[in-house]
Length: 296
Ligand SMILES: Cc1cc2nc3c(=O)[nH]c(=O)nc-3n(C[C@H](O)[C@H](O)[C@H](O)COP(=O)(O)OP(=O)(O)OC[C@H]3O[C@@H](n4cnc5c(N)ncnc54)[C@H](O)[C@@H]3O)c2cc1C
Image 1 (cartoon, rainbow, N blue to C red):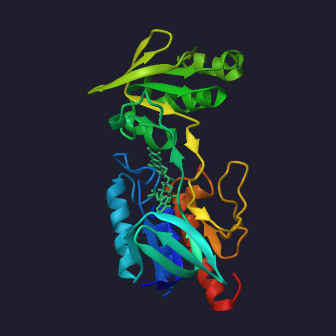
Image 2 (cartoon, helix red, strand yellow):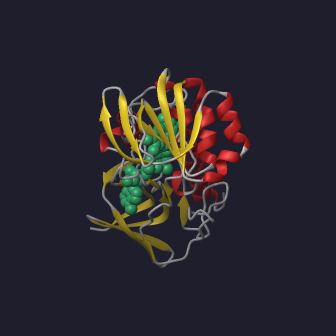
Image 3 (cartoon, rainbow, N blue to C red):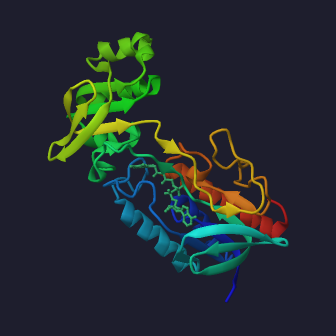
């Protein structure tokens, strides 16, 4: 049986759930379809989310899902494979059937390509991307920052206050003659041209073997430039992408197709949880206004 909805949200991270919460509170019919792993699922705790600082990702998602359901929204597990036009409306094709809706919100997030040398259990517990969210929890431990060039060196500088010792591994020789290299040196950190080739996880952190033959112990390892563009379901209509291959939207979250909206990391890979939530709430309000007034 084909169900009819005002809005179907594709993706069950904070961006999609926040859109759904706002729409459900406005008494619009909304279905969230989500499958796969939320981006921060492997982390022990959530940071930089005022009021919920330290909550586990699982508890955060359980709480928001419960709130969406309490207001009458539906949250179901299913991978969406296609969104296609059906006259003025849209059809959302997923593993268990087809939904019909007036608007779709793409909240599919983005993915990180974790290098093969990182042991799976270390991702999110000892290996991170964001110094703002995870450096503080490893204060007093040794840090290794891994990257290609100047961005890795800058992430290294952000880790200085927390690291007992800090090594930045870059692949670009060029960065060693930049001012940032001298800033690191002045703060007692080492910038070397080298890269990890393997690592094992122990109680005290990662034991990293490098191409240059060093063995490093890292309580915290920061990776950068591992973000990949969102993986979109098949769309039978064009939507504009940004230079970073995320979905281009206006301030409210509308894409270049008026039936399709986008929020969270699917639109901006740098968005933290709070920004992704704000995207979701803003899009939810605009969709409600559009439904009531004919414009947002
Ligand atoms: C290790 C790590 C730790 C982090 N810690 C923090 C932190 O402490 N604080 C902070 O503010 N930010 C943190 N972040 C960033 C945070 O994870 C993102 O800001 C947030 O996840 C973005 O939310 P989102 O809803 O856009 O995407 P996501 O959380 O990735 O959610 C998208 C969901 O949609 C699903 N999906 C994708 N395609 C489909 C499809 N076709 N059909 C159905 N479902 C689909 C995905 O599988 C996923 O479950 C962290 C990131 C990482 C990598």
